[in-house]
Structure formats: C-alpha cells, structure tokens
Amino acid sequence: MIPYPDLDPVAFRLGPLAVRWYGLAYLAGFWAAHASVRRAARRGRLPLAPEDADALLGALVLGVVGGARLGYAVFYNLPHFAANPLRLFALWEGGMSFHGGLAGAALGAWWFARGRGVSLLAAGDVLALAAPLGLFFGRLANFVNGELYGRVSSVPWAMVFPGAGPLPRHPSQLYEAFLEGPILWVLVWWAGRSPGSPQGLRCGAFVAGYGVLRFLVELTREPDAHLGLVLGGLSMGQVLSAAMVLAGGWLLWRARLAGTQGD
Image (cartoon, rainbow, N blue to C red; front, side, top):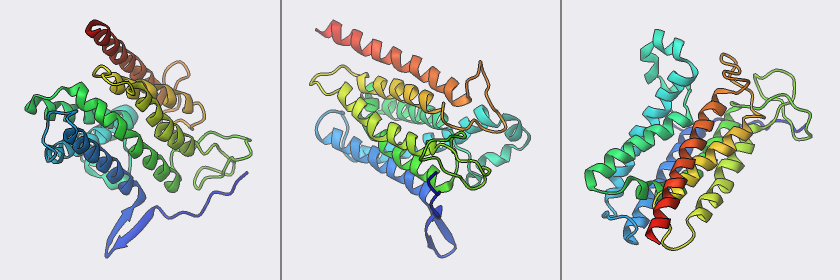
C-alpha cells in the first residue's frame, strides 16, 4: 500500500478567494481549445479568423460548465436537484458530469459553427486534440481532492483515501488521467494523421475512444454511493460511456464512408 499524499485542493489564495486545482484544470482545457482553434484558423484548417477563437471559447465555457452541472443533476442526483433546483447554481459544492459537459460543449460548438458557416465536424476534429489535456489535468485534480476514488483493492499501489474508510483502494483517478490524457491524445492524433483525412474522423475517435477507456476504468472505480450499479451490473458512467461508443462508432463510420466516396 502507498500512503495517500497530503495534498491541498487549494492551489493558492488571492485574498478571500481560494483558487482550486480543479478550477485550474478547467482553465487548462479551455486554454488548449482556444489555442488549437487559433492555430487551425491560421493554418487554413478552419475558415475562421484567429480572433474568432475568443467567441468559440465563450460558447464552450457556457456549454461545458452548464452541461456538466446539468448532466450531473440529471444522471447522478435528480431527486435532490428536483427538490432543490437552485442548488444547480451552487457550483462550489461540486458535482460535475463529463458526459454532460461533452454534450454542452457539442451544443456550444454547434451554435458557434452554425452562426459562422463552419462545419461542426471540422471544429470537432480540432477540439478533439485539445480535450485530452483538460481531461488529464481534471483527473489529477480529482486525485488531489481525494474524490472519485477506486474500489477496494490489494494491488501494491492501492491507497487509503480520506473519507473512504480504512481499506486501500485503486487510485482510479490516476488511471483515468493516464488513459484519458496521453493515451487518448495519441489515439485521436493517430486517427487523423494522414493528410486529407475525412472530417469527423478525429472527433469520432475521441468520442468512441473515451467511451471505451472510461468503460474499462469504471471497473476499478467505486460507483456513486447513492446510485450503486444502475443497469445490469453497470455503473452510470459505464452506461453513458457505452452510448458514447455507439455515437463515436457512427461518426467513424460516417467519416470513413465520406472518405471512400471522396476517393
């Protein structure tokens, strides 16, 4: 067993304001998306002016934060939020869903792309390469917070997490950081490495790849105590990730079909 390190969820303080590592992880993800769009615009891969990345960033921030919070309320704690709808705005209490955030990001990107005549799939391909950076830092922040820990385990690197009882558990946050960060990035990059790759290929690789990796890592992650296993022995995260695999598979099929017709 490896001792859980004594980590402070607060990165630094500015007077009465506590800046947390989790918030900085969100900022890293948004910065990566902004930089990727500006770079794609400069290189002609998106028919946008580089400054349009600022407008896209605003749409993504609203979509991700709003979608992540609403997704958590709907998928993970609907009775509580139905009885206390104003708690939706209490973001400092925690409770964000990646799957909801992805849906919100897609909606924000669609709204932005539609207003500028840009292909949503082309924008999605660019953003798909940026997303793993935010996921990587987000999962590290989960580890710092001591949340979303794994199931009880006897592996040599198991840890006793604060508030999770006396038994050692999988550091599933670190598994997710590695899989959803560098491994997923390499997968998405590889999918679109060839010049002239059809639109939607990297986007589909991200959606399907994340779904597969998250489904697998959920086998080591402790299900939410108030939910448990929800469908045929699957966690809510696995159910939502399975839907992502189907959606990503459809995007990949569509991209490959378009590429074949183009040939």
